[in-house]
Structures are given as structure tokens and as C-alpha cells.
Length: 388
Image (cartoon, rainbow, N blue to C red; front, side):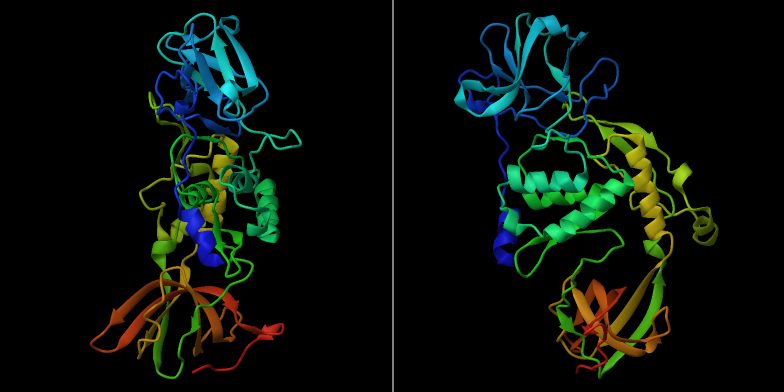
């Protein structure tokens, strides 16, 4: 079941293109799939994304969105804002019988191109879909065609509630063919979320710093002949997050238009201990963040979760039983001479694999595990059975 879901998540999804209509200007142009609040003007009198000309008859008909939308739309060409009297909007148009889209039919030809700003797709209750977890659900069910039974609703609702409490809002435009897995990782990753496919084949969700609701250790690391030590991973520390955001999706621009230095959300105490530590690459550039409040909320959460070093356990195991582990897997291990923060022995502690080093000559494996703080339970208590 899990393999089937993973396979479908890895399959390419083809975005709808102008070639479905009888007389497009360029048949390869994608119909823009618009989500969230895209009403911020980008630069001086410019839109957020290009509208493809799907019919060259007369002054031209352009696709504003690849599905029905509601609310105010503004259109721009090379000369700036286009007068509303120059075109007729139909925000729910079954154009040429090829499915409902939003269109703009021009009576006066625009100058060279048409760009738009609008609010994207709404749910069945008429509410704009902008909670990142709700948007992930929308894509999974209504764009990529998965069934409701393939979603773990409990973890999805937990993530929706968290994102709502944090004030996160997502907005963006899908214009390229993609694998659902990659698009989902991009969307959720911008807001410190993640997903995985459970053994039952359901897509479950979690947030940075929060382990999945149910962790499935791949194996128990043999405990009789191991050497282990604990260290703090200074490389995991992030205490300030510069961010570029507000992506323009028009290929005539394509830049991030806004910047937050991270100064307002940095952790001074962590910087005093470890120095200023930034994300890999020196900054983040999330494609789905468009407003300052969300940008700062994400900066704050990253710093809150990563201002202290991760606890890492390195285990040298004198066999090849662990050689098949992969980065990201969970494994249970017992190292009773090391202790938790509550001074309990690390018995059947659960770690997430950071790296696997295999030495075929010595017939041994060196594991680096991030201590999740979780452990294997027997009932409601820690399972203290020592597994070979």
C-alpha cells in the first residue's frame, strides 16, 4: 500500500496547457493555477504572473486562472494597469467546453503581454484557501486526484490547527509540470512542515521539531557489541534567518521582491554562545510566502526550534545488520551508560538516522542518529527489554 502511494506521489503531474483550445497563441503555455492572496502589485504597475493568450481571435482571450476564482482581478500590460473597460472578465467560464477556467476577453488589444493579480481558489464554503496545510489537502485531493482515504486526517488537522495559530498564509502559482512529492515538499517545507507515507499507505503530516504522530523504527540496533558516544551538533544551530520572499512568477521578472534580515527575530542569547548562525546558503527563499507577518512568523519558529544544538549519538556497531539504513529512517538503540535530559538510561531510545558509514573490510557500521527524545513503549511506559 505504501509503495503504491509513494509511486503515485513520484509520478509526473502535467499542468493544463493552452494547446487544449482551438487557436492559442502558444500551445505550450501553462494555464496558471493560482492559490492564496496574489493581490500585491509587484513593482510599478506589474502583475504577479503572466496570463496565456488561449484564443487569438479579435483582440484576444486570455486565461486568468486554470479554474474558477472569485473576487477582484487587476490586469496589466507593458503600459501598466489595463482599464477594466478594455476587457470582459468571466471568472467561471467553460471555455470551448474544455473545463471551467477564468478568462479575460479583450475588446482593445493589450500591449505585448497580460499579467494579473487576483485571489486564488476558494473552498466549497467560499473561503480563500491559504492555510498551507489546507492548500496541501486541496492539491492532494483536487489537483493530483488522490482519495480522501489516502490522507491521515488526524495529523492533517493537527497541522492545520498549528498553522492557523501561527498565522501562516500561503500564496503562489503553479506553472510547471511536477511530481506531487516535490511540490508537496516545497509547499510544506516553506512553512516548516513535512509529510511521510505510513506503512498503511496514508499521507501523514508533521511540523519541524515535532516528530510524526507515530514513529516506526526500521530496526533495533544490536546492543551487545557497540561503542557509542554523545555529542552536540553545532552545525544544526540556526539563530537568525535572513529571508527573500514575495516571488514574482512571471518569466519576465521571476525575482523575489521582498527581504527580511531576520534581525527582529534573532536569538541574542544563542548568538552570544555560538555566534551568528544562519541557514545553509545564508538565507531562505520560500516561494509560497508573500506577506511580512508570515515571513517573520516562520523566522521566529525556525530560531525557536534550532537555537540550541541537536543531540547526536554516534554508534559503532560490529556487524552489517544496520547497513541497509538510510538517512531519515528511525532506529531504536540502547546505550544505558548515556542518559536522557531526565537522567534516564537510553534504553530503546528512538533516533533518526543522519548518516550511515559502512566499512566492509571491518564488517562494521557507524551510525549518526539524532536523538528524537522518543522511545519504544510497552503500554504507557518505556520498554526496558534489551534486544540483541
